[in-house]
Picture (cartoon, rainbow, N blue to C red):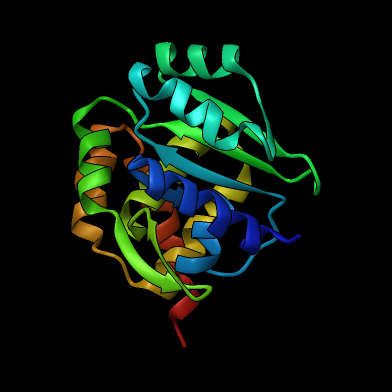
Length: 187
């Protein structure tokens, strides 16, 4: 079983449960930017306490899922994962942020036909903003490389990104990337 098959399986379950979702992480980076290797699937979800038991039942037969981890993730608006028993592949569920930006990300998600299925993806602009925040926290250059690729391939709305980057205190990081991008295109 590969990640694409697993992604479609998980998205089908989320849609059946009527759980709002959007794909993010390495798969979204490969969709909006340059292809890269990833070993898991990252999905932002809107799961509430009242959804918990339905989610556990829906995934419990084919995936390892910890009730405690789901409960803690809902309580702390963080993350939990499930692991497919047969393949060992992992899905990370990130709980949607209950903030103005988190709400806007969900409103801006984009449904695209990919892998033969309509799937919701984080917008390229919001993916860039998330990558800037992750870089600010982790200093991992992978996030900068991902951001550069998304800018080159998707030609996102830079005004929107700059506005939020100022609010997130990541504007200097963004400006450094954009300055590098301009140098890369000079002939």
